[in-house]
Length: 618
Image 1 (cartoon, one colour):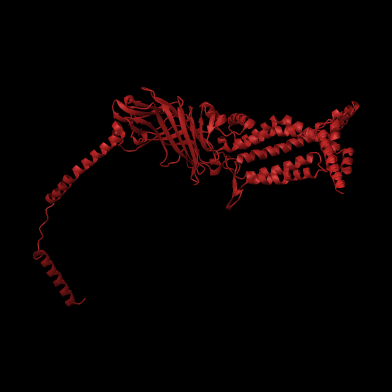
Image 2 (tube, rainbow, N blue to C red):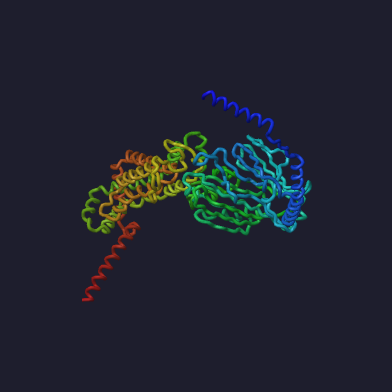
């Protein structure tokens, strides 16, 4: 920049400074406080009467709807959380009911808190009654805590939370919850103090609604074990586990339970409910299980409170039995003798739990115990089949196989005659085997809902109560699923080898094509069916069946080692000689032999009739 430019810039800046200091017009500051105050006062003067009028109108309307209890319809909903060793319970001030609860010792399949109910708007627990000729629900009232609010309790100690929805000091609705440190239950007392003259009916209703969340990896299996259960004077009643159902009970109800696959949420009154209406509705979305509803009537008694027990616990047989929840009927233990077998199974499991060992080992020990129990029947079945096997290997039987190779019925008839002579029945090994089937079937009912297995790992399985996936597929195979369960594969393979070994140890079915086909189906098709059918079932069940098959193979190998076929054949000849010495009367024929002969004679008669008819036609 040259000298002239610099001088000009300095002059311009000087002129601007002089203008700003001496010639710029002065502005008069606007009044602040007077104007603002005037505006605010005007606003307050015009809105205050409107607000007062609205509040008054609202209070009048609330008084029309709720009567004197309208004073309890205003407030702020707060949540109080009380934690015991077993439970974490959340109680809300609006309605004064349990908003939610979780089991501290359990986790969801995804590792999150194991909530008993889903956090949905429809969930509630409330009382409904007629007050001053108005229908009132405690769901609309706000309850305030009385005294200290406990935060936690443990051991043998207990703690109380008392909530009141008050009209005044002498008239109020009181709800008291008592928490026990080491228990799964919460004691609940409901009392309406000073309201007797305004209660018009002789009953009040409890409206209990809850949506059970998805808690398990296999949500469909969970739904198939979830329903509403209640105890009537006649029996334990269950609503449908496969579809929506609503049921009314006109007689007394001792308790009501929302039961899922592994857990129970129950309400047990000190005095039976007068009647009830119960409903269950399935969901299709994966995050929810089923919606449950129970509406029960309670007899009103002036001046008295009402006591209940909330039970939130695992479906353990012994635990449910402690609360008189009829576990034999509450749990899905099967039908007929299967149910009673599973009662014994549950007690054995409780005993084995005391060993403090892996549940996979417990299942192994349990399988050994079952084999010991059925050992007499298994041995008897093996001996009967061994006799037939030895007998069918004799020259006499082989000669019959060759002689009647083209006449299966005649072959069976001739063999039956020999079986009868030596005192052996071809069905002697079937009955002992059939007697074992209820035990096998009972395990199918027990393991898929054995909460003892839930969350327990063994080998590669992270949870024995559900399937063990070693490979997740990117697609789903109809009837099989979208994963590969290794325990299911082991169970199917062991079933194949067990069936194959058993058939090789049994008497020959040569000359009987139908029987041969059935044997092939049993050997090759059945394991394949089980592979598909059990892929989504509890890995603990498949592990048990695998253990059972391997133990059975080992057991039969031991039987084969200790049973001498030569001695067995000598005993058969001895029995035959004794029977022949007494004469072979017609009456000595076995029932099966007689039926076969009758069937053969009837076929001959039919064939003769056909031949005669053809001759007559000619």
